Amino acid sequence: MAQIVDTIAQAIKRADKTFFNENYTKQAQAVVDGLRKAGFEIVPVKPPEVLVEYAIENIPFGRLRPSELIRALYGTMVENCRKFVS
Image 1 (cartoon, helix red, strand yellow):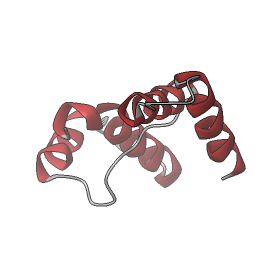
Image 2 (cartoon, rainbow, N blue to C red):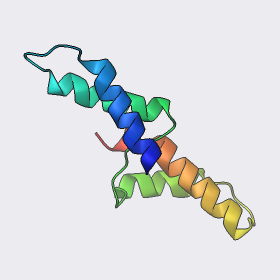
Image 3 (cartoon, one colour):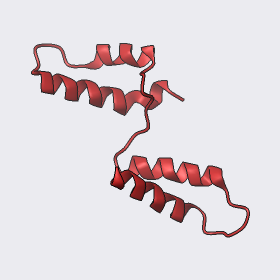
Image 4 (cartoon, rainbow, N blue to C red):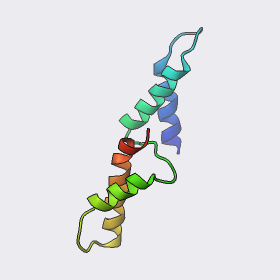
């Protein structure tokens, strides 16, 4: 969690160096960009049904060990979440 807080703090610091008329939208976008650059993605707690269907269609077929299945499913859903969530 500390890494996420540090990433957010650095993104806000880089976003707006003015003392007046702060642009909070710019700061918020910098936070999102900073998180993505650091390898994080912001996703909803409950995936939309269309994302679930996409994951079902795009995970590898065959027998996978549970750990491999979870990694494949997690990666597929997180990497593609922006396609289905605005």
